[in-house]
Image (tube, helix red, strand yellow):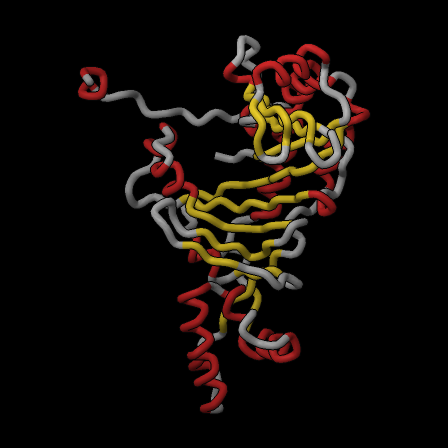
Length: 293
């Protein structure tokens, strides 16, 4: 299950007269906007949420719902209907993701980190573990348990996976000033970006490989921290200068066979979305007992 572009939000100075009038007549005032309306719940049945008449600057926001399942052509066709010409639209937020079947969140978190990132967070809850390798107003990179989230949301796609199956999603979010290409007509340029260029993969060298007792003890302590919190969080415990020393002394490059080609998969999933190659997962047929219910 690979989705490419997973979220798309635009800021606009213009909304077509039909939909602007509809929002002002039926929309509700919330989230800093004078009129908010979900077009899926209108006769138009469009996968769009309109946030009209921003209270601070008067601009409008347009969120495309379920953009991963639309592809580029259908997305642009819908947006043309709602906002008219795209010259006045700017991308405010755009998310990319790729799914890794057979890979657990923590097996991945224990061998990857993001270089210059300072802010990170770890969440453990009923929807599965989430590891934020980077979190800021401009850019966020996270790993999370996609299978458990599907089950928590009662998504039918969760039935495709057995209890022992693993499915980890890597997601990168660009917002505001962090959006690389803001013009909607430049959305195709994202296929040329290495979206995960800052993601590094290293593995801890076993403490038994260190002959000096203090180094062996330090490696053992680092191993415990990595197992509990992941490599990224473990490294961030140390000042940058000491961190560089630890990387050189205690880490080694991950063998190419140990981790899938994540960057290549991300690039392909984005290109598939741009080329309208949307892969719909095939759900298993309902059982007889399900039919009777």
